[in-house]
Structures are given as structure tokens and as C-alpha cells.
Length: 589
Image (cartoon, rainbow, N blue to C red; front, side, top):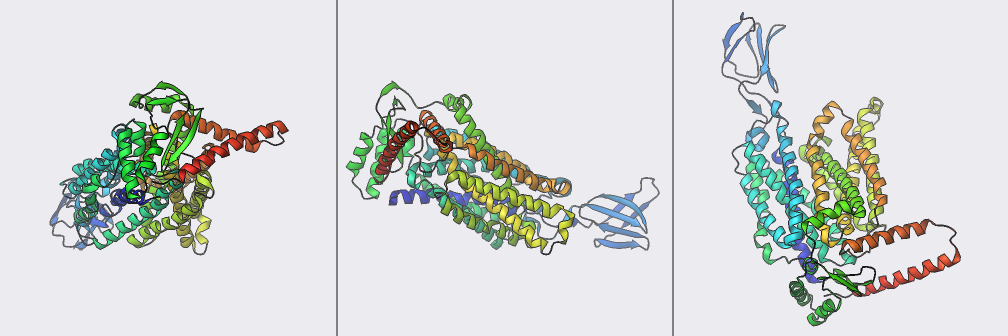
């Protein structure tokens, strides 16, 4: 991987920090603040029978107003008792008093407590709804109009909306802007990820995920640090500081290049050649030689080739087929063709259903665990930091094993770990006999962190695995559909705290079943490690058939000798093709 690729990946990896800030800032700017009913200057009440009339000055939250009358200010209600008789119980009459200044959180600033306690969670649900719409809309636009313009425009708009949020006058406007922020966040994150993936050769395709598993938790840790330093400031100033981290988006148009794959697949080979020449110059290799290989590899994708009679060619991240039989002209797939592929093609339908289920499960588990992380310890920031730190060892495990055991087995192991840990967590928290276990609180924390470890590892695999399964013509649309489904989980996750108050076992048990279910479904997916990214649906189908054939061959025992020889000949042919691929992959700009 040359200096050009490393520089492009750096520019495209930076938005991971921004996305971490905007998605998880809700934990801090919308934190719960302890409160009680505010004192009222004058109390006037009449009993339902009309027998009691009184007027007293109230100077504190619990004061004898007479030898027989006591007024108590509760969290969400006021109670008046006359010796042992309760003569009044009702809502707070004069607002609320908070344990911190009201501007530390939008929850306290807009009094989103008591009967409005669900509204802060609603703001995160609305953002997830925006993310769902953005994942659907902007990935389709990226397939149609290009990755770069979609990415840069979304990122600049993301900065603008984040700045405006710091000045919103009311909660309704805040909700609208959170929706837009969620949509633009997805447009920024998904298109930048696809740009990175399509930039790299097959042998280096896992590097964005390897780096991303450390950049994301680093962003969360930086978020915690920034919010800790701004803990004595208004949440609006905190939002301004977080938004300022996206200012570099204003110059990204001149730093990031369009995907060579997208140019090539859409027949814009002249523009692809300009980027190839630029990359060759920065990597200090012969431009003429690289362009010659590009042209001789048969990159005229305005022609459809017979997919059964092709040869693989790879030039530093571009994987195409050398045509041997030209059958008919074709055009880049339209929007209707893209969407019909997910319904009419049984192979694509099976892949997208399993992948969407995986995204739903991982998103629901991840969000639920991090939103409830503050309950792990008595200190608000300490619980959050512990929950985030466990993502770093998950990143190391991902980097070590993703190419050693492959994507499928990494995903299976990760979800089995999280499923079992969540089951243990449910048992420890809900079985009365577990209360007598020495160090039960430590076991509870460890189980929660192990579950978070498994979910984080599974999510890291999923970000790499998903785009590798689908061809270039529908890759970002498939990625967007999967991310869209995960946003449904993101809309549900904030309410897990409310559910747990009524059914303490329900969130953990549900997540455990989902994670264990994923570990079974992944077995029906092909392994993508070392395989070129498919360019078309036809290539993907041939690959899936070949993958199924290999697994079937691996389970047969006692084949006849002539079948063994035939399989050996086939394997030699595949090995020769693989050797040719590897030889071309060794060619760098």
C-alpha cells in the first residue's frame, strides 16, 4: 500500500471521530440530573370537601407550617400531611430544583423529567430514525452520483447542523435538528467507509476495519474527556466544542478523490485514469506502465462479458475480469435494477436478510450496553470509561484473528461470547440465590464488559464483512439497507432502561437469544477472506456457487478415484487463477 493510499485512508478515517461525538454526545448533553419539586412562595389549596383553606409561606423542602401541617417536596410531587392524615398529593406547582445548574443538560434546561422523562430518549430515537433515512438515501445517491460528492456535502452539512443545535430555543426544534444530524452522519460515515474499501487491494482490505476498531473507541474516549473538561459549562458550549472537530470538512473536497472503482463501473475510464496517474505519481512509480496495465486489463465496462470465461486481474485495489467473450452492450444499473436485485435474486436476498439481522442485533446490543454503562459504578464518567476501554482489547483480537481464522469464524465466536456473557448477566441480576455470591458486583461488571467485548468484536467484523459480500453495482445500497435496519435497533435501544424497570430480565435475555441466533445464521454465509471484491451480480453468483461447492467437497468422504482426480484438476485450475491474482496484486502504483 503506497503513500497515496495511506494518505487517502487517513482523510477518510477522521470522520469516525465526528460520528462518535454526534451519536454518543446524548449520554452527556442529555444526562439525567437529580431533581425535586421547587419551593413555592405561597401555598393555597382547598380540600376536595371544601373544609380546608390555608395560606402559608414555604421556605424549604420539608417544613412544619403549623404544629399539625407538614409539606414535603418530592421528586415529582408535593405531599401535604396533617399529622398522620394526607390532605394533599399532587404535581410540582413551581417547576423543579436540580442538583446541578440547569444548563448542564438539555434535560434540566427544558424540564424533561417526571411525566416528560421519556422525551430525552425520544431525541435519540429521532436521531436513529434520521440515521435510518440517511443510510437509505445517501447510499443510493452515492451509487448514482458518486461517493466523493455525497460524502463531502454530507460532512459539511453535518458540521452546520451541529453548530446550529447549540443555539436551538426549544425541544421541538432540537428534535428536528437531531433527525437531520442522524441522516447526515450516515451519509458521511457510510460513503467514507466505501471509499476506503474500494481504494485498497484485496490483500489490504481489512486494514480500515483494523484501524477503525481503535479509532472508534478513541473517539469515544476523547468524547468522554471533552465532556469531562466541559462538565462545568453549559451543554450548548459542549455541543459547540464537539461540532468544531468537523471543521476540516471545509477543505476535504481538495483532499479526497473519487473511487476509481465507481468511475470504472460507470464507464468514466478517463477520470479513473486521471486518479491512477495521480496515485502513481505520489507513489513514485511509472505512470505509463500503470496506465498500460489498466488499459490492457480490459476495463471497458461499457461491454458485458461472459462471466464464465474471464480471467482475474488486480491492479492495486481494482479487481476486474479480463473479457474473453463479448456478448452485449450494457449500461450502469439503474435504481430500479438495483432494488429489484434484492428481491428477485435468491442469493442476494439470503445474504441481505442474514446481514440485516446481524446489524440489528449488534446495534441493539451495543447501544443498550453503552447507554446503561453509567450504572456499572457510582461515578458517572468512570462507568462510561470502563465500558469504552473494553473495546480496545476487542480491537487487538480483531486485528490478530481476522485474517487467521477468517470473517465467518470471527463473527461466530464473537456472538457466542456475547450471548453467553449476557445470559450470565441475566442470571446474576435476577436469580435471588445469586445475591449471596461473594463479589457479586464484580462478577456483574465483568459479565457486562465481556458482553460488550463480544459485541464490539462482532461489529468490527460486520463492518468489513458486509461490503465484501456484495458486488460493486449494489455494494453501497446493500450497506445502506443493512445500516438502515440497525437504526431500527437504535430507535429501540434507549427505551431498554424503561423496560428493565418493569421486566429486569427482558433486555439481557433478548440480547442473549439474538446474539446466539446470529452465531448460527453466520454459518450460511460464504467466507470472503482473500477473495476479490465482485464487480457484478453475475460474478457474485459464480463465487457463491463455487463457495458452496467447496464446502460440499469438504464434507464428502470416500469419493471415487476419478472424482478425486477431477477435483484435483479443478483445484489446480483454481490455484493457477489464484496465483495470477496474487501476481497482479503484487503490482503497486
